[in-house]
Image (cartoon, rainbow, N blue to C red; front, top):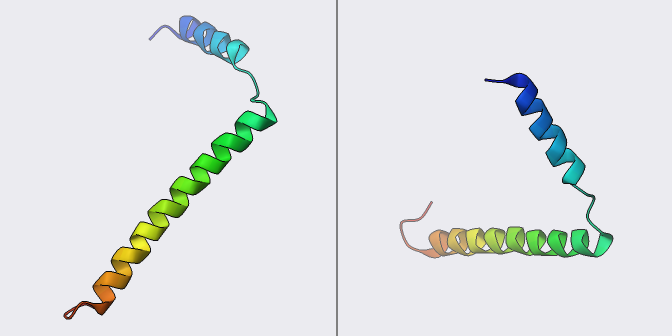
Length: 57
């Protein structure tokens, strides 16, 4: 492991990185939120189905 080379590549990546604009951040947050809600809804549907099926918990 060559530490100076690794450090320089990390610094180069940090220099290229930029803070996203508010519109981009907002869009990513909305999509991530919708994904979380979709997974939660699917889990709720499975829970509800398993509760009403005979032999469920």
